[in-house]
Length: 267
Image 1: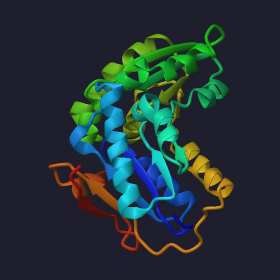
Image 2: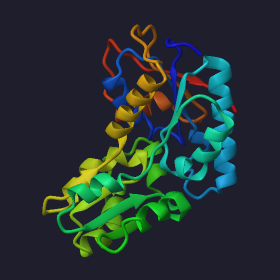
Image 3: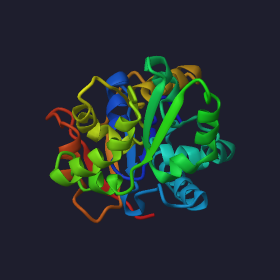
Image 4: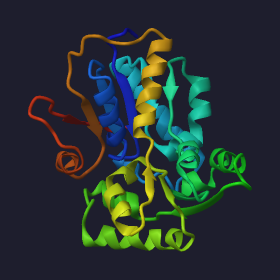
């Protein structure tokens, strides 16, 4: 593992590309390798044991093939399910995701916060502990978004079908007069504009991509692992049967001078 070694990033599909994008903007000299575990998406309904098994396999793959210097678990569900075990098993630094409850609390004037997340995140002990810490003074209204990840995995980010589904999930939160919405899944970054459109009154919509990128920067500094000479474009692995290139093009504006390459993997 060297300073020029890449940062590994993984998610249950393409959602974590929003995190890759933020890391690339903040740390343009870093080499990035991303694994889209689309074949096993969504992680939300799966058991912690199954998610942990996937995380270990992907981690082993990235260490063996790319000698990564840091891992970003760009998935709220996987972070809640197994980041503790990952940190116990591996010596390299690992940065995870969690719903942006603390920033939401700072932003909420009415102390009424809505949280969109997967079933796995909402059921996790880690998430429950996070809410209980602030219980009483603030009101949290959680909404599991079944089926949303699958649509985003297909590149449906502004279709009538996804708009109807998102509006249905937002209706209960609007009923509770929330003034802040937390996007508790990296996939949901891509429907942020739909969420903002739904509320007639201004509602603050918070995602965690930027905060995670800053945490990656701080972690690299702490371990003296910053790279000053980028020599590769981001490499994306996917086990999806669909054409991930077309999905990526819909999700991330690709500049001619910074092409994203995809490469199949089977683990």
